[in-house]
Image 1 (tube, rainbow, N blue to C red):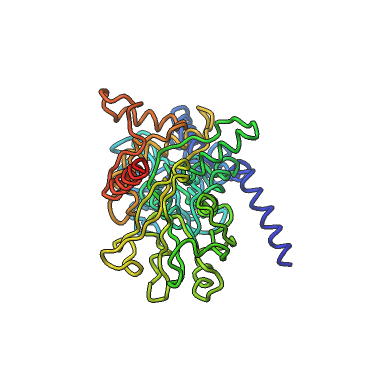
Image 2 (cartoon, helix red, strand yellow):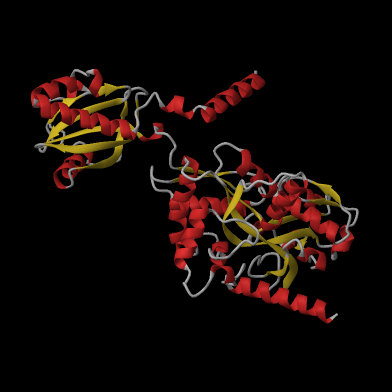
Length: 483
C-alpha cells in the first residue's frame, strides 16, 4: 500500500510539473480579469448602467467565467452588482475588512478615485474551494463608479518564480543559507518569488540546472564546473548550456578527526567520510586525497550521521567543504575529543583552483583555541544558470532575478545574512566562462569607462579574509619558487 501511495504521488507530481497550463486553466488569470473589466466598460458605454448591472449579477457568460466575476461599487461603498454573491447587492460594504483586518473596499474606492485603476491584494473566500485565500483584484473607474474583477494568487501561472538548487540540510547548509537569503531579500509577492530547493550540492547541482524541470539557478564550485566541462569535451560534447551569474565566496575545507590523529598521513587506509555522493565535498576531496597521494577507505554519508560515527570510532574522519562558519560544524566542541586537522597545500592543487587558507578561533571558538589557527585549503563558489535562449520565458525570469539581485547586493552584506556575502564581488570574472548576458550588461553599466572589462581581476580582495587568503597564496607561491 505504501509503495502504491508513493507511486501515485509520483505520477501526480509529474503531472503538475509537466502540465502546469492545464491545471492553471481552471482558474482565471490577471490578463483575463482585466479583459473582463474592459468588457464591463464597453457594455456600460453602449447600453448604460442598469443593463450592465443586471448582466453582472445575473452571471451572464461575458461577466462570469470559472472563478472570474465582476462587481460594481459607488464611491460610498454601496454594492450595485456582484457576480459572485448576489446576496451582497444593495449593501454598503465600505467598512468591510478581510481576514487580516484590511479595509480593502476603501482601498478599491480610493484607487479608482485617485489613480483610475490598479491592483489590490486582500483575503477572500474562494467559492470553488470554500476556503479563504489570497486574492488580487483589478479595479477601474467607470464614471462615478468603481468596477473590478479578481484572481486567486495561488492559482496563477508561476511566471515569476525562480527555482534555485542549493545544498543539504544535513551537510552543506551554506548553500541552503545563501539560497534562503536570496528568497528573504528578493521575494516580492507575485512579481518575483525565489524557491530555494534542498539539493546535494557540487556536481549534482550542475546536472540539476542542466536537466531538472523547474530549476533555473544553482550554486556549485568553480573547480567542479571546470572539470565538468572538461569531462563533457572528452566525450566530444561541446555545448553552452551553463552560464554564470557571478562568483560568490570562498569555501573552506574542514577535516574533522578524533584528537589522537595529528597528521593527515595517519588517515591512509582509514575510513574517511567524504559527504554524500554527488556533493561538492565528495567530488573535490576525492581529488584532493589523490593529489596528496593518500589512499583512504572512502565512505559517503551526511555530516550529521558522520559526526556520530566519528565519536563512536566507526570512522576516522569526516570532511566538509563549506563557507565558514558552517552551521553544522559550529555545534562541534573540542571537549568531545574532536579537532580540525590541517590539510597541507601541494602544488598539484594549484591547477584545480585551490588556494591555501586557515580556520581560526573566530570561525569556530569551541574547536580552535584563541590565538591558534588550522591550515587548510579553499575553493570558490559560483552562481550558475541554464543558458535559455533569448526572448524566452525562462530567460526573462533569470533576467528579472538579476535585475532584482545585483542592485541590492549591499543588503546581503549586512546582518542577519550569512557572513560569506561580505566576500562577494559582483565584478569578479570567471575565466573561460560566459556570464549571463543581462548580468554582464549590468556589470558593464557599473564599471568605470576608464577600466576595460578585460582588466578586471578575477578575484579582487574585498574582505580581510580575502586579503589574508590572497597573501597566504603569495607566500606559498614565493616559497615554492625560492626552492
